[in-house]
Image (cartoon, rainbow, N blue to C red; front, side, top):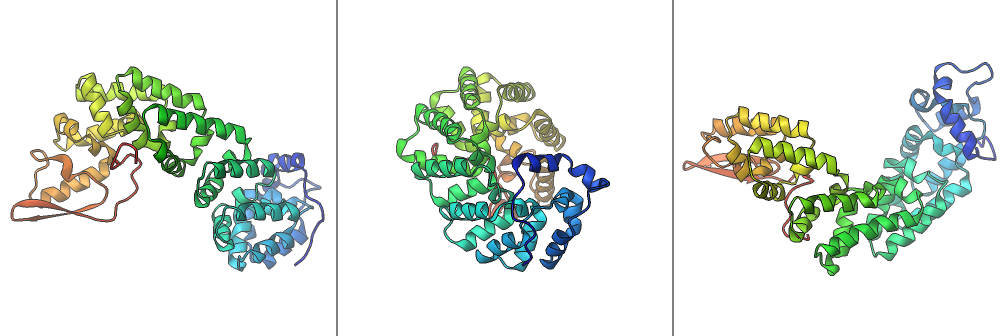
Length: 376
């Protein structure tokens, strides 16, 4: 494979090139022309140059690149031609990385990947995560830290792929967030023996929880405690919401709870019970809840029915109206029956002997679906 250059861009030059990318993509300067050798080398790899020109054309103007070396390293890991082409189309900046840096990344990622086939699959889906070579030391420290927590390799590799920013920053920052999370969990009565599983589920569901300020988690707990939630109830809430708990804000919760209480015309105690059944009241913005309340009322459903089965608010208005229509065609009047017929994830309905039966299919992902136990 053709070698085009022998030294990589410095960090400043790479950043400068990114700043100038729009100018290069639109109208190249008098002295700025595409590197023909680079373009030809990418053509030889069956890379769609049009995609690169459209989104990251500045890369094609660089004179110091490593096309053959990058392709060779990917090929040595087991990537075939089409995979290599897709990786370079998605993340052409990969050819700016020095081969020794890419080899170091490969060795680092292999420490948390079961085999090279899995690693190639990650690179194909998350090329930018793998080719983030400028924070190698931080990545290494963070891997060692999460391994010390006894998180399995699969979880760590998924975190590195889906939330690379958290592995690029100093390990101490992640350590502080994890400490805050575990202290909150244990402080609410969570089981020490179950903490590892809880933490793995939390990080898997929302890997960006590591990027949240630790104090935000404490503020959320304090707000809910001030609203009358007991320690046991708070544990139930954070166990149901897991990683999404960090996405909440005091202002957002205050607004949605006030709106929901106004619509439902319920007491503070009733509102807490409804929230425990349906944490979506904390998570969804007011406009979404307003649309769902409106859809339910328009279908003839009473607020008392919603209070009895608040998890119906987790369903979009379109899904609710579709299921109501289907139930109506089967002779079931949702206005006088239980809203449990609408609940769940993906269901089929049938009526036999005058009774409604639900056929449960493979469930879809539901971030606030109730769990089996308070700490599962």
